[in-house]
Structure formats: C-alpha cells, structure tokens
Image (cartoon, rainbow, N blue to C red; front, side):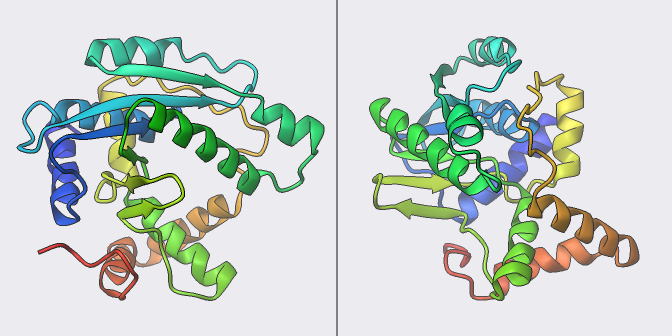
Length: 240
C-alpha cells in the first residue's frame, strides 16, 4: 500500500467520526508493531496538510521484556519529527514472576493503559490514538458475540472520563493486509513482541476462524464491518 492510499483511508475515518479538532495534541500508542508504526507514519504526514492543526507525541510503554530494542523506532520518530518517550516499567515481572498470571492479557492491558494515560497527560495531550484497524473491528465484534453473547465493538471515538482524555482510532478503514504491505514497502522498523503468550489468545482464535469463513465467502469481512457500522452500536453513527 502506498502512503497516499493510507492517508486517504485515515483522513476519511477522521472526517467521518470527527476524530480531530484544531489544537489537539495526540499521544500515539507506539508498541513497535506494524500497526502502531503505520499509524505513526500516517498521522505524522497528515498533520502537515490537514485543515485542522494538531500535534502528536509518540509513547511506548516498555513492559520490561528482554530483547525488545526500540532504538530503530526512536530513529524513525526523529526522521518524522515526532517527539518520542519510552516509559520503562516492570509490568512483565509483576505479571509473570510475582503474580504468575495464567491469563495475563487483561491485567497487562490495564497496567499499560494506566502508565500510558499518565504520561500522555504529563505531555499535555488531550487525545490518544490507538492503531486498531479494519480487521480488529470485526474480530472484536465476533469475540463479543462468541464469548459475551452480545453485539458490540469498541467505538471509533471514546471519551475516557477517568483520565479526561479522548481515544481515537484512525486506522479503522485500513485492512491488515494493506498494513503488511505498507510495512514492507516503507521498511518499518518492527520490534518483535517477546511476550510469552503472544499468538495464543482468544483474538488469535477468532482471527483464524474469520480467515476460514472468508475462504468460503470472500465478501464476509466487508459484510461484518458493515454490520458494525449499521448495527446501532453506540459511537458508530457517522457525524453529519
């Protein structure tokens, strides 16, 4: 995927759901994965010409896992003119050594979000951007159906009253296959996730299930996404 196509999809999502206002300072959650690096690339270029002026900060919550080197991510941020902050934590030690969690994902997510939100506010950010993409949308909806028995998905824009910060998801129109293409075309410095439970989650199961169903019904993902947009899920109504 070329940069121009990426920017077009991101701008459409931002406009459809009014994600950005004049004067916003947006903290990007930068895990080092292909999705967050693509989001960094998109917003760093979009801010140069988007009619509403905004600024961005890149933040990585370092869980303390061994062999995760963010030096090339830092180099990319400098090239793009984006301030970059790494928050060093002991989340991995707390979860795997101290608490010995058998299902660590939920606690890990809460700890990472807490550390991220505190730093984002310290840096003067009023919004934060996560790199959830098109496929994440339909996978989340399917997980909700299968494991919770309800038709639900996260919203494109969510105000978090506890932290007084608004969460936006500018990649919701970008498919994972296109992100992979963008990563390869622009040689993004992806940092391998060293988490011992990476790839063994309920989300991974649902991803494989959708992939299997998609092989029999090529338009499945498109229809599932349409269902989310038109299914009266709070926050998915397009702005006028």
